[in-house]
Amino acid sequence: MKNENESLFDSLTHLAPFTLRARVVSTGREKLLQHRNQLAFLVVTEDISENSRREILRDFPCPIYQALTAEQVDALFHFHNTKLLGFARNALSSQIQQLLKGRRLVAPSVEEVTMPENPKVVVLGASGVGRHHANWWERAGAQVVGFLGSSAESVARTETSLATLLGHPVKGHDNLERLLQHAAPDIVDVCLPPALHFRTARAALLAGCHVLCEKPFLYDATLPPAVLHRQCDELIELANARNRLLGMCSQYFEVIRQCLALSGLGDQPVTRLEATLLTPIRNHAPGALSSWLDLGAHLLAAVQGVALTRHLRPDTIQLEFPASNQVTARFDCTDRSDNPSPPPPLECRLTVGHLPANTQSPNQRIFRLNETVFAAHNAQDDDGLFALELQDLVHAKSHHIPDPMRTLIDAFSHGRALLPGRFAAQNLSWLMKIAQGIASKT
Image (cartoon, rainbow, N blue to C red):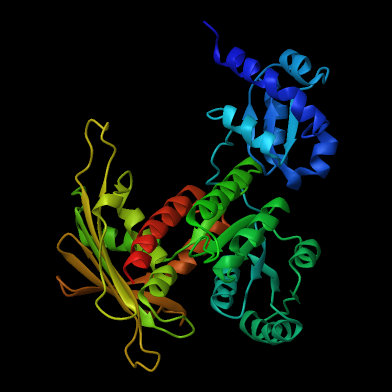
């Protein structure tokens, strides 16, 4: 009976002459590095050294498969003593890639690294929420050494505002490549519109930077969900291969952790989570779907902080539309069916939405864990800095906690992603499943 390698070899025997004739396959590491962005995928042999495999995972952003031996490669493609093959994008390559299913290499997940004592940070988009990020980076001991603006005029305005806020000049650029080259940052903080997240995060990772990306992790209305998921996987694999942190910024993951700590539940499992996030509409398009795409990732991060090993069950999703710019998503999170002692199901009810732009009401942020209910309000700490007040509505108690965004950025600046790439991927998956349901009903 043939083993998998022999079966693959037999299948490739018929395709190899055509790939050579069409110049689809090539070898030579330096040559492949020069054209790495045009490659569909790579194949490394099973007899390649561990160091070489690790370096290839680090240096190439495309999918990488491990199969065959150097001897088999020689017989198929007439490349002597070759342990690395590159395949250009082509219909033949797609056929070969199908044959390689189940052999893809994935670098180990990176969730903690050693950072420099005062890491250098650039903020992509520092006139909105990025301005607050810049402040927290410096409070965490990092150095904000540059930022990206959309035009020369916006760069000039932001240079002035950041100098006032931080107490020192910060050089802005309207070109990402020049910014990365001149500032040489350790960390890139992406606070741009979601459609720009993939391109800029990828460029930053390729430049050797750690990347923190605002929510939603990825979204582009012109792309189908399958493409967004592939982009997410590419960023995670690229970060892992280069031993770089990749994280998503959602302060509500930290908010729910604080609520859990203050709830008094102890080891009692959370079986019911309700959360509400309503905020003025500002510059966002009207409609339930727009509100969900803007705010849903925040409350899903809160669910992730509670669910742990439990996963959203798509068949349990139910949607309600309490107002034109609001949506309520109900669903259950359950553990794997093969877990011998799974935690009980988690019933979730999330409401997000935008209030009228002229409303005088503050943000509405309510979190219910079983029977304990917290309301979150803006506050100040003893130094006059922004903080958060968590008001326990059941026990009539109030607790001040540090600004959750500050906590998240402080952890990242010290080498730890509270919401690492795998959490970002799960968040995106859940966000898109619910978004598809909303789109079908509105």
